[in-house]
Length: 619
Image (tube, rainbow, N blue to C red):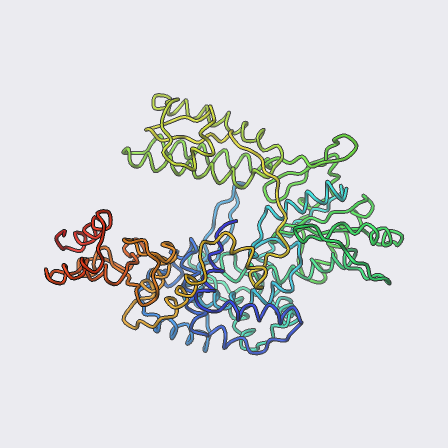
């Protein structure tokens, strides 16, 4: 499981209990009419800034030409004041439109709000997410905490292999993000219990933010949510949540006269309701199950006649209820025993094995073509790299692309065939363009590469750097999300915390650091100080001893007076006595603290290293 950074951040700023309460109240259908006080809370704003900083797009400028680097220079108090004023009299700045090329030659429009508008959206997201999480359907997998494409695939595999649902309704919504109906979205939020009128007005303003096109023209949208906005994925899930529950109500949650108790497996997933299904099949109901990831979804049916009727019903429902059109060319009913169906970059089919059907899955044709082209282009970049350092950097980038392909597509049962086909094409490019530089023997320095690819005979070396073979991959079974995992309940967080190395003491100190008041320090310094303490697991960088709050000093490796900055790499957490010793110039002071600390040779070497970097002589 990946690190739950946002969960840890919520705990640092003492907001987790508050979010838990929102989740619990939402489960009980509570009506929320006063959310703005929480959105404008000082800790919520600081948390938003910290979470945004971790986004790769935080360095991208909006129409005001400002990025997270400009925000980090402000004091925490100034940032809180700016965001509160923005929320009090909210009027969004224009959104910058950029166009991202797609493999098919078309472009995907992305909207980039200004950095302050992004922080405002993050503040709102943090408060709305627990409320909405309590109302979302179990098989809604996209843009939600602790869920991924792997979970969606696991659900599809179960439908095909265990439930023998071999007819699938593929629906492609035409330009979903560009065609979301604003009035319908607001009504859906209202029905979820989000009834703070000031917040509703702010979200309306966000949806109607003017958009500056690449050619300089400005448009004023009356529908759609801009892709690229921090709040857009949550709003998209709110829109399609009604679809999830409508499909579910047609079969899964259809009430019966008699109440039946469902057994659950060890992951907390309800087992197939065989008896209830038998009762329902005696009616004229159509058996159907939805699996969704963002706007990409499939509906599994048992019979072709049911699937054909469901296709027509869903098409009409989307048109009448959500004002959304479907793409007629891309939408269809597929018999999985005869044809493949594409989903999230995979293609799925049901094949006979003994007396039952199992899933055979590959990378989709489009994914194979796209990933092959990316790797080929990276090989060309390696060929034309200038100096050795740049070439090594580009080789590492190539390897990271291979890691990404393997980590995402390893859930396909026949991914080895696909990756070997890509490897065949890549080998041609490598030997045609880099033949003189390729060696069969070399040393693998990185443990990750050694563990995963060290036994492969396909691995090659360029400039003593390993080229990871795309064809060397092992499949992995996609797993369901454990039902008991939930970031908004104490029991659910226990499962998440199993992989975190923080004890209660460290979490308590992290909270103190995150909420401490230092008026003369920048947002960047305060945020990075918490990150450095977390990365050192609360231990002194010199002695290795666990530190309590009154012992912690954050040292600038290169002092500010010598041109240093507040960046993460320039900070280190040490004991306060070590800090005094690093900066001490008086011989008596140095001797006093040496006697007090009594450092061994290794510790003294570290102290001297920091003393020299700070402009002092070694002891």
